[in-house]
Image 1 (cartoon, helix red, strand yellow):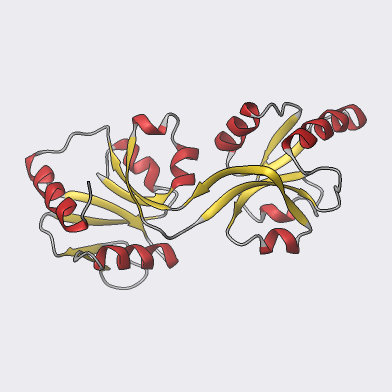
Image 2 (image 1 turned 180 degrees about the horizontal axis):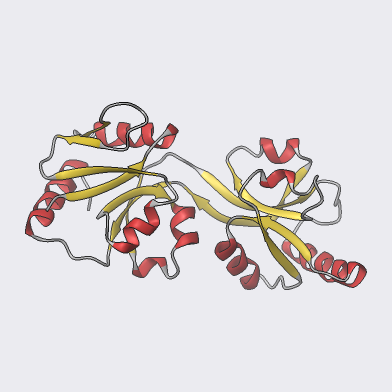
Length: 231
């Protein structure tokens, strides 16, 4: 069997991943047109490239359908419960940086910290009869973060689209979302809480822990580690 590597199938993450491996003597590439999801690996034998969406890679790693995968730290920790028992971080790749942050309307001048948010949430429930809504697609990470920081009176509402627009559209009072520069938050009149950093994320190479490698896969993994100068 061959060692399978899952890599994002498009965009800057794919390009930067190909570049990272290429700088270390392992060439990755797409076979055929941009609409095809097959690829090739040159520079090390018995390694197969699998092109997937970044969001699929945590699931495929956990299921053992790929041995290695490149995806964001945020996606692994959000999608996999007790992630550290299912995958191992092999290398941070130093690109794809983004922060998962809690943000509130900039007009909330008296709300700058999580303690302030907790107080506002309690008052909001008394005044409106329902909990303050936080729009996000990172339910696990945000719920754990708020619990650890003592914020209780809120509800998470799912947002798979333009999360920053939910406050303006009055479908949420606050948001938790990924940001790189903060420009989109500011454009939507939102501000990050001073202590509202939930997670710093970047593209990372992960290894599956659930499925043992056979002899051929182990041999390919050892060679790949040498070429990538890992561990």
